[in-house]
Structures are given as structure tokens and as C-alpha cells.
Amino acid sequence: MSITDDCPAVAGLSGVRACVFDAYGTLFDVNSAAREAADELGDDWLRLSELWRQKQLQYTWLRGLAGRHADFWQVTGDALDFALDALRIERGGLRERLMGLYLRLHCYPEVPGVLRELRYAGVRRAILSNGTPEMLAAAVHNSGLDGLFDALLSVEEVGVFKPHPSVYQLAADRLAIAPAAICFLSSNAWDAYSAKAFGFRVLWCNRLGQAPERLPETPDAEIADLRCLPALLGVAAR
View: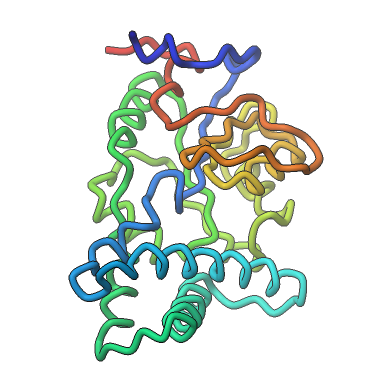
């Protein structure tokens, strides 16, 4: 069976001029930091990773609602501190190791090839993320993705986290492309649904097989990973 056999049929993506990707969980495996430290964490690595991610997202939403913005590096550190404390993990140097590993998250295996295919086809490519510019540059470089993006867009330009509409507007403004001609891809359901409500064409990259959200608007399609993207855009595989 070919990849295209597993791809959903989605009308209207042929007019897409740019693909905008969420970073964490979509391009980069957020579990890879704790997994790399499994020699210290043992069987606790996955519990720590899941709680770390949960609190990281919660803190972005709560800070947005309270109007108390801090950059994603601080939020990531605060969430890690909570997770380590909640799980009663105390090992000298572990926090610093995990934060360093977060700058070197592994990208998912299909990502480089998909980005090269889109570049060959003339489809513009950008990241739109809660991450700071420094975090995004490090993740891209350490995954060998240098030169595969036209823009790395951080919420720091607008001073509020997703899903605030001004974040999605940032991509349309910086790329100078109407939202309807942008395909947004995120593994985070709340992000995918919010981007659709903003006006993007949206593919929900549901890597974890999550249930659909009960939120306004629905993504144009659900995919398991990014391998289908070139075919959905009508980009012929080489």
C-alpha cells in the first residue's frame, strides 16, 4: 500500500501557497528530552515527560488569561520544576540536563523529507510556535533542518501565547498570504481547532490518536503524521 492510499481526500488544498507548522509535538518529539535522560530517570521518564508537557501548556494558557506573559523558556523551566517536585525526583544536575536536552529535541523521521518535497514544489514553509526565537533556532539546527524554512515565527513578536488570534495573524502578516491560502499543521488539537476558527486551512496531525475536541470549527482533515502532506497538496513525489 502506498502512502497516498492512507491519505484522506481533502478538497481545496490545491490553492495552498504556504504550510505553517506548529513546532513542539508536530515537528519535534517533546518526549525525546526525558527519553534521552532515561538512564537517570528510569521508568519515571515518561511520567515526567507527560506531566512536564501538561504543565507547560497549562502555564501558557493561564499566563495568557492573566495577562502575565513570560517567554516559553521560562515557562518550560517552571513546568519542569513542578513536574520534578510533584514526582519527588531530586538528582543533582538533572534539571539542567533536561533543559539542555529540550533544545535538542528529535524531529519526527518523516519531517526532513516532507520539507524538502515542499521546497522543491515551491510551497513556502514556516514554523509558528510558542517557542522563543532561540529555542526554535536551536531545535531546527540540531535536527538538521537548516535552510528548510522561510521563517521561524515566535509568539514573542506579539507577546501572547497560542491560541490568541494575534499569533495566527502573525503568520499571515509575515508571509503576506491570506489565511485561506495557508495550510496550518499541528499535533495539538486545541491549536488545530483554533487555527481553523481563525481562517487557515488546517490539517490536524493527530500523532497520538486523540479524540476530537468539542470546540468551534473543525480542521479540514486529520492525518496520523506528515507523510500525506505533499500528496494532499498535489505535490508529486520524487
